[in-house]
Image 1 (cartoon, rainbow, N blue to C red):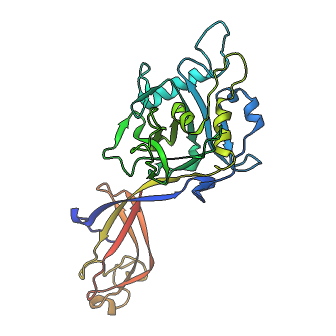
Image 2 (tube, rainbow, N blue to C red):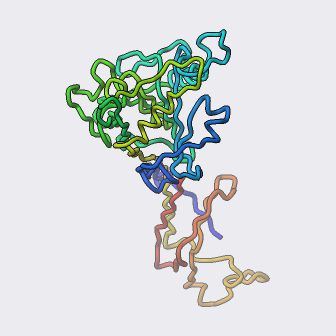
Length: 336
């Protein structure tokens, strides 16, 4: 075994973005079947959110839908005598802290302040790092005679990227797969109601603005305080309803690779301490022909730190013949 110190120019760092379909174990980018679990709805979690699956057996959890309201409207109060405290107010407070980082802040969708929202939270098992901006298409079936509303994010047309406590923030606009449908409004917003919400790729969440959705698709929220809430069911019906049934989204992952170039020079790594090369008892070269014309075969590259601790091992696909007439360049790739 021989050692050679690596130089600064032997290291090159590269970063590549890898995209994949988001749904059903990253096998597809399009989700067109939606199922719920009556067991989950009947459980205590059903007061807060609705799990959505891609199979009737409820084995493939894709995302969850929730409804948040600042004043606690739209869900049954925890205590009928205490106003404003309900599952919807809890959801609102959780997302406000997560996204805005300020318990006194208000959500502003495209410059229009809203006191409530729908939340679509992608299951953590569906992605490794984040969602891929520009890949979103979310279709919502209209009611009251209104057409299907198709939503995307404005990442392809935004001149600057906005950030908050949840990372990158893009506006949800009328469009498909990153292409904005301008129509009457040049920015793809709802007339007088701002954007259709937030696309938050770094926490895999969509926040939908009920005011804009109601204006364009007729999807209305209800102010329930004494009976079961149906607001998240309203959004689920719009996603899975007739004429919609398309939720398209990709995940994104940045793979950082460290390339290390190992360069055995002509005068290096031509001898071996292997017992087939050197006699263990005398330390002599076993074969006299190897004294002036040695031949070795490189099979493994080990990377050590200054304390002689082995950090990584690279195996060659086949042994590489080495002697005084040959030099080699071995590229080791470390992904992390």
